[in-house]
Length: 437
Image 1 (cartoon, one colour):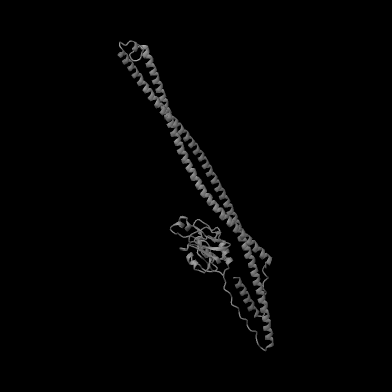
Image 2 (tube, helix red, strand yellow; image 1 turned 180 degrees about the vertical axis):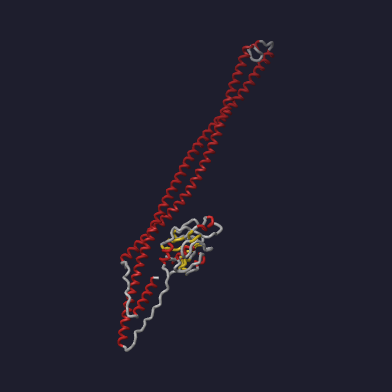
């Protein structure tokens, strides 16, 4: 457009020059100094360096955040295991307490039975002696009529007392066994209580580890958010610095155009003077008419395209929305877009934003797949400010406008808004489409 204006001005100068008059070139536009240009470029490069550093820091922070998230999940599972182990240990300890109580009861009952049997035996022996019975008293021996009778009475007494002694010994053996069981139960109870204490301590440690992991993850998430916010802030400064560079370079280009226009005017004046001199020296000849130079086709610059796109920042997404004049109502898709009410919203979808941005360059179809074929392809390694980027290696489904510096502007998805974000390289097409330059 700038070149077209310059050429048009030169043509007007030439036409007016044929009538014998010259058109004065307008005052010169601002011409930034080399030092201003260099300073602005240095500032933009410094901002770009900061963005690069913050991008690396953000990648590290996000990696650390993912690792901490995995650690949180592990600690949560370990805490769950500790809770299960503690409950099992508590159940085992409770059972051991019941077993110990039962063994103690059996041992106490055996001891009581032994004491009762011993008392009965003592009473039997004492009664036999006191009552003079044939079973237990000394009278049973002295009142015998014959030695055979005495022997029979002695054997009977021994048999009766011996059977009671055997029963007593049996009970004593049972008491020993039950006492052993009681001791084993007490030992099992002690071990179970120890295990329960250890399990409860392990649960406390696991819960503390889980809390610590969550706190670390939350702290890292906060730090990641701070880095991301700082990166966004510096990216905005980078965009401003790049815009300043572009603005100063644009001023320099306009000044150089003005200078070329002025030189062209002076050359035209010199030519007209030469023609006038030649005309005055010839008889009756008239001055020749100067030919009009051809004008360059009018068109938009990359910065004009980007400025149009950036003017729509924050406009809501509407599937099917947007044309060369601005945002429009979306349309129904019978699915996701309808669920967001896009048909009732005024906004852009991804290809609609490109239609609006490039309205002064080329009429684009409202389909990203066709827009991919609308210009000539350049490898991603050679992409530059003003190129269109596409996604969908198995079928194009998205388009965005590259701003330079790893940034792009896009209308992302239903529920979203026109935004500036870093270029995403997952599923990106290997070529960018260029319409200007």
